[in-house]
Image (cartoon, rainbow, N blue to C red; front, side, top):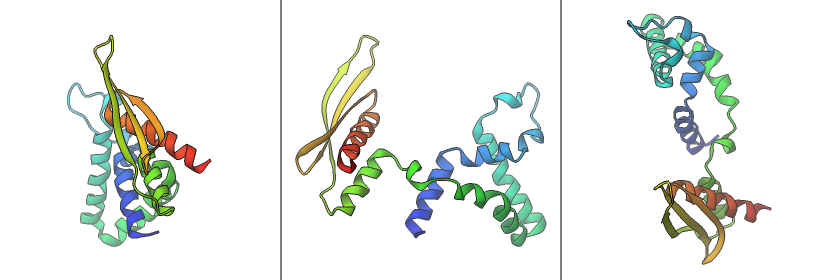
Length: 160
């Protein structure tokens, strides 16, 4: 695994609520104390993430770095190894990496229309062009989602 892969994993593990879900699986939900009116069933996943990070800090302060490593080796790293790197990559990243592997020019996303619907939401239509040729088209309520859909279509055409 390269340093780039590790950095990518780190960002995705944090972004995908990984620590919060791991915290729940480890049973931290049963030991969290909430103030009056707090409902354990409705607390934010970010609270669980904070609890996990605090727990690691407490292990370090009370037992030292060796104990932190033992805990992470037993509970954290096996979970990380189950994460498929390709499943975490968004469509734009997959397309860009595919183009780079074939030594082709980068994709260009072009907004071709922007219309307001009856519900007053804007619908964006974007095309994904590679070397001036349209390979994908996507629609979405944000430019980002439209680009992702265009990238998916383009990637699918290129690899199939």
